[in-house]
Length: 217
Image (cartoon, rainbow, N blue to C red):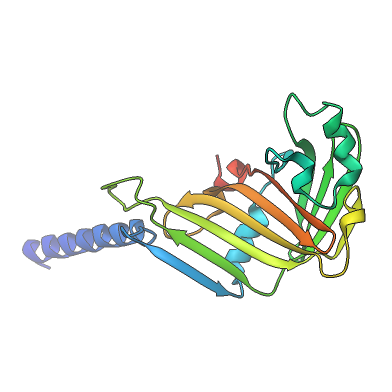
């Protein structure tokens, strides 16, 4: 083999390697103006991402200036709010949340010691939302998208201080929120929000996710 042919082969391999690296690097790049909404059954990869989401140890009860007058179904813990025990950190509660690939369970404990457990079966379909909100211009690999995983379904059971607000037809709306590129990873998602609504209930919790372990940090 001539020296010229050998050099040509090496140059070709180098070009292919460079192209492959660039193609891989931009496989998840987002384009300016991206706006996507998709509803369907989550695939195996997405289920893996959901399974990796880690909840921080605190949950917060969403409250407006109306306080408990703007909610239904949590009367058993209203006295804790009224006596001022939540003044230091309004609505903060202890949280243990888990996902078993079929259900989410949220075990929530107030500072006064009252506990509730919500069991939420995963629905057959989910909604994904990804959008360029135009807050970062001219990034080399495209914008960092705002993204959500959304789930709507029926509450299977509610115990403890959530039980009086539970009735047939009680539903939940669970959202995971974050930022990232065009591909989804557990490390993209930083916050969650859970709404419970029904004939006797209307309240919401929210909190943070801690996915450093999933991200390999």
